[in-house]
Image 1 (tube, rainbow, N blue to C red):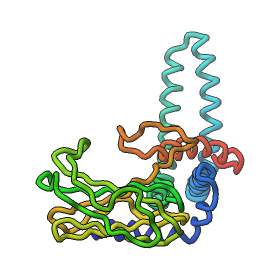
Image 2: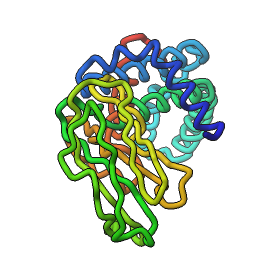
Image 3: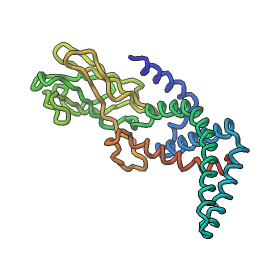
Image 4: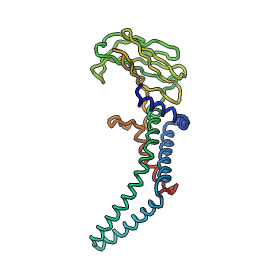
Length: 273
């Protein structure tokens, strides 16, 4: 496990303390509350570290300059309009300096929240009685050979434990085998063992809990190098936004949109410039 992965795991466990209660809510409600909390954090940081008096005066000046620009436009006074534009640019530059202060301070906590959300909101945790598909990936040389999933207590196999490795149609050239099983009881860490050519790989899955374990796992094997449990991706309001093409999970789009929508309202409510 590399340093970045270790840091991410540590950060997620740290934030589980204050944020774990969100996972008790329906997932759409979790996303909404999480977005509001992020927007609240950004708004409070803006209030604490920026010169609020300066920002309010800047806003007042910009409104006044906008009015004066309309008058100059109606009068056809282009030199005056140019002077007004230069003044507006200077004021916006002062606002930008304050905005950069907010960005510098809020970047770290928002990144930490994003780490937590990626590990806790990306998929829906598997439930007892819900069919699960388990996959194992092999080199192309293993195609047409045999692999098997060791039967275990706590899960009922819906397919044969022995499978013939097939060509992977989505990731050629490679081999693929898959099994369908149905968990029969809640389990913090159900361990599935897959064997092939004297190699073993263990895929861990959490059943009936608020959280899920990573659906993909890499293994230090020559042939049996990767296993995966196909968990359902969380899509806000059940809408598949097809965001995989841009490398973002569906919930991330909803999170960004809700957060950006909440910030102006919180600024007005808390009277933050």
